Image (cartoon, rainbow, N blue to C red; front, side):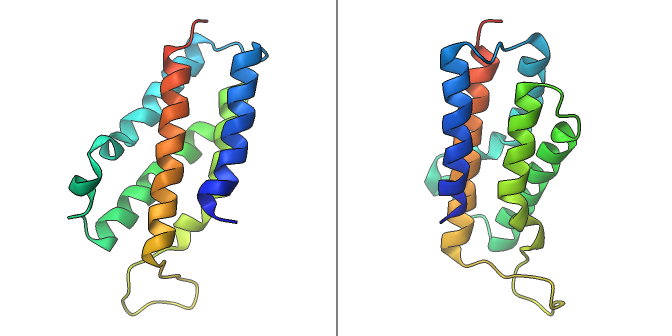
Length: 137
């Protein structure tokens, strides 16, 4: 399975909870969603605008976004916190991704498909966070 496919399962569960009303979005959820969305602004660029980014730049942006998720998910006391904690688990391999260079045996150089897959997962995360941000409490 791909990272985006694994992530889709978590997104489907979150969307179901939102649709059923089992997840009552709070002001705190909306605030946290806006905080994470701020780190994902680079995803709002049209795909051709992302292409000029080097592999190193894309990996840096992915790791920064994952770091922001981890910081917010460190206190999973709400439905959003628990969803973000699950998101961090799915997206965790990004931490070990590095561009080709002299590296340690712990580093992994992702192929272009893996990077695109991770960007897709973050794009889906962004879509869900926009829904949370706009949800009635």
